[in-house]
Amino acid sequence: MPAWLILALILFAAWILWRRYQRVMQAKRERFIAGYDFAPALVEKFRQTRSGLDPTQEQKVFDGLREYFQVCNMAGRRMVSMPSQAVDDAWHNLILFTRTYDLFCRKAFGRFLHHTPAEAMTSPTRAQDGIKRAWRLCCKREGIDPRKPTHLPLLFAIDSELGIADGFHYDLHCDAKNRDNYCASHIGCGGGCSSGCGGDSGGSSCSSGCGGGCGGD
Image 1: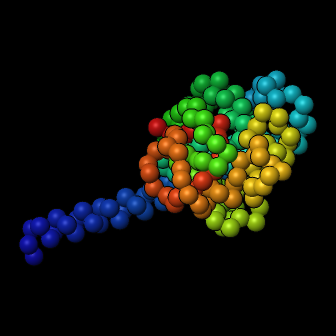
Image 2: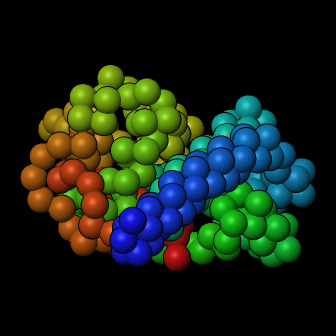
Image 3: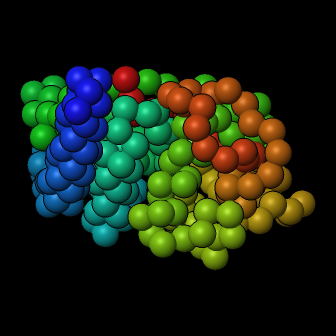
């Protein structure tokens, strides 16, 4: 057997093993994120930032933060925009607990997940790559067709559901009655896109959206 063929087979086998290792680690990190309990001190800190929410609503925000971290785990090192202002506030407060956040990131992602502000959208119907990726992955996790959604994923619905005045509010379908809301139905299909904060350029064309912050390198 030629030496080049032996080398090619070795490299292919190594690639297969690496891909299998990545899948195992992603599943392990998914379980860690799902079972992670946010400290009461963090919840109290968030309460000072977002007063007016009852305990059930606060729990929903932290469920949303856990969901965002799951999406970041799925995305690898690609940028994922934060679709919710309330959940973004919870993330900001977690980051203030420096050692706790660093340890969490190492176990949840195998690296430190940086937070960077999202670029403002040019209009309610133009989305950057990061928000498109968030939409696709959120829909995938909740079994929603990203091009023909029947309802909004948690991270895209939560600000409206909790009545967050300065939040990001999305509608399934855009109409004249909700000109101030972002058009979620345009993210998975449609025309032009703005550059935004995304990492790679992969994904379908789209329009729509806004986000609070981005996770990624």
